[in-house]
Image 1 (cartoon, rainbow, N blue to C red):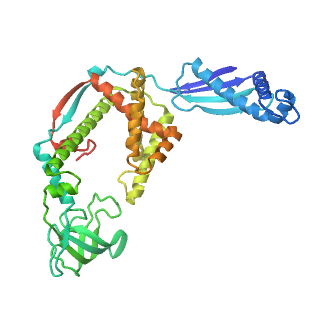
Image 2: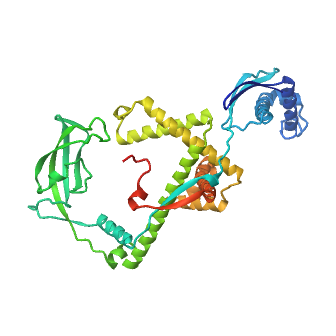
Image 3: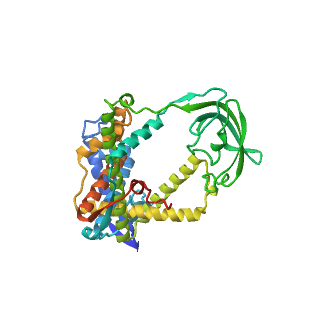
Length: 442
């Protein structure tokens, strides 16, 4: 076997590998000898069939099997000889593989970068924490009650007021031309909720059952569909019904409707849930701070293939989101080239942090226990009542799916390991600041 390195460019390595015809022939004959003792041929006792006959019947298949094994073995030898750790499945191009000739192929492999983690004890991180006041549970219960508030039909001659629900048909036009999504029937609009275009709900105040009105509005400049943003529109509206909100009563009976013993038990459960939610968000913000710090402290080249795969995955998700919104690239403020450049930076960060966390985990023998995996499986199964058995079978038969379940558990364990060594300081914040999206520029 001859292994010749033909090029090295960053994390990319290329080789030409030749396995001599003699070696292929010897391995093929050895495999046929093995088959001789296992294959039953008519007219021959087991193990007595001549190799020449076996070669005629199975030679082509055996040779293919031998060559495949030779490619795998020589690839592993090349990687071991040059101390290379592949980042992805190596690319193999067969050059010569005819019978009675040397096997020759080209091997291209992208390897993992050399990573030197920083001293984690030097990392200074802030964990935003928000105290849960005694009134927080009551406020949450009030919001829950408001969401479940019942509405009763008002008299036919009653007018719509702020807070009422108005059931309408509407047909929107821009310059007397209908537009996609601008027409619907029997839509419930609660005045004051600001769920529609600015000015739409307000113009329903004073309407009565049976009224037909024209509402004039202007789509916001920042409206999601670019072809509508900033445009003046007219909606023809027909009012079918007006419903008024009924009083909200928060008592033991209300708690019982939610499956709780009484109002006090509901308050305790809500308080406990809020505390858990705050801690979850607090940890999420701390983790984001840690990843930002790790990203800033570790700059290294990432395997181009991994980067391209991650970038393409992000781009596909972006296009799927556009389709869900009914938008196209033409509706965006930036060109495709600029958008792809942004997503490439995001992909680079994700790949780099993924490689870094994997390296830290490997260096420190961090693993995910079988108990943790079982718990994750049961959590996943609980989301599909009645289909638990099918879900368990799916994960048993799909190692890649099981790995996708293991990956976030592994990442959290590595994050916890780093946080134990880092300098973490709690910083009191308001609820609004705690829940604010770190990527929200506003």
